[in-house]
Length: 493
Image 1 (spheres, rainbow, N blue to C red):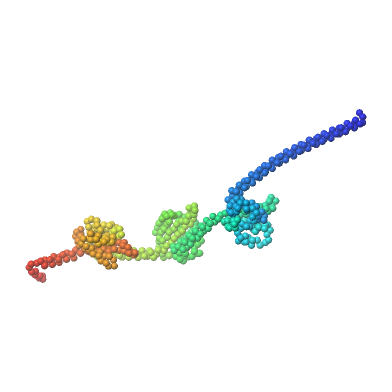
Image 2 (cartoon, rainbow, N blue to C red; image 1 turned 60 degrees about the vertical axis):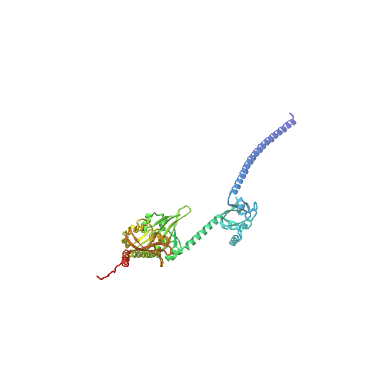
C-alpha cells in the first residue's frame, strides 16, 4: 500500500475516533440533559406542592382571620396599616377596604396619644409612629382603652395587645395588634359597681346598725348606725374579727358567725340560752333577742348569709336593733295591766270585759261571787250570757261593742236602756233576771285604743234586789195607806 493510502487510512481512523468521541460526548450530554430535565420536573412538582400548600395555608389563615371576633391589625414599621381582618371593620365601623394605608395612631384617642408622646422623652429610634414606638419601649403591650371609629367617635372600650413581627433575618417588619371589644362587659361591670355603691350607701344610711363579715370572719362593713350605737368607728373595726365587742366582754362567736358556718339550731341553742328563731324567707334568716349587760341594753338581732352566683355562702350580715325603750314600755304596760287587773279583780263591783271578738278577757271575783261561775270557766269564752240567761243572746257589753242603736237596745231590754254622755258613751239599765232571782243594775262602756278605735267593752253589775224589795214594800205600804177606809193608828213600840 502506498504512503498516500496509509496516510488516508490514518486520517479516516482519526476521523472515526473523533466522530466516536463526539457521539459519546453527545450521548453523555443528552443523558445529563435528561437528568437536569428530570430534576427540574421534580423541583417544579415540589414547587407546585409548596405553592398549593401556601395557598391552602393562606385560605386557612384568611378563614381564621374572618372567623375571629376580635379585631386584628397588622402595620409596617412606620405604623401604617397593611392588613386587617373583617372584625376590625366591624368593631371600628370602617368602610370595607378603607383601613389599609391608615396610620395606626389615628385609631387612638387624642388624650391617649398625648400621654404616650409625652412619655417618649428620648428621640424615637424605631418608628415614626408614636404608638409603635411606645410598644417598642415597653417591650410588650397590653392595655385597656378606647379606639376610634372612621368618624372619629369612640368605637367602644377594648382590651388591646400588640407584638412585634420580625423577618427570618431578625429585621423589624411591623406590629400585630389585637383588640377585644368588651364595652358591654365594661358597662355591666360599671353597672355592678354602681349597684354595689348604691347598696352600700343605702346600708350606710340605714338607721338600723348593720355589719358584714367575709368567709374568714373578718369585718368588711360597719355602717354609721353601728358606729353610733357602739362608739366604735368603721376604721377601727373593718379588717378585724372584733365584732364580738358589741355584745360580750371576751371573744366568742356572734350570730352571723354561726350563719356563715351554716350551723344548726341545736348548736345555736348551746350559745343562746334565750333561743334563736329561724325564718325561711328568700334566704335562711336567724333572729333572737336578749339583754346584754355589757351594753346595758335589750337587743333584737338578725343574721342572714350572703351567697355568690353559684349559691355558695361567701359572707354574712347581721343587724342589731336596740329595743330597750320598747322593752321597758312593755314591762311598764305589763305592770300597769297587772295593777289594773288587780284593781278590777279586787273591785267590790262585779265587772267583766270582752274583746273585739266578744271573748271574755276579765271576770273579777265579785262577778264570780254574784253569778256563781268562776273566772276559769268564763275567761276565753263568749258565754257571758250564761251568767244571766238560759239561751245565747247579747248582753249590754256586746251591744256596746257593736255600737248598737237604741232600737236594738230596746228590743233586747224591754224595760229600757238609758244613755249617758260622759267622757264616753255609757249605757245603763236595770231588770229582774229570773235565772238569778235577782234585780240587777248594769252599766256598759266601750274601751278604745290610742287611735280612738273600740277594742273592747266593760260591763258592771250591781245586785239591787234588796233596794227593789224595799221599794216594793214602801209602794205596798203607800197603797194600803191610800185605800184604807178606817183610820190607821201608828204607835211606838
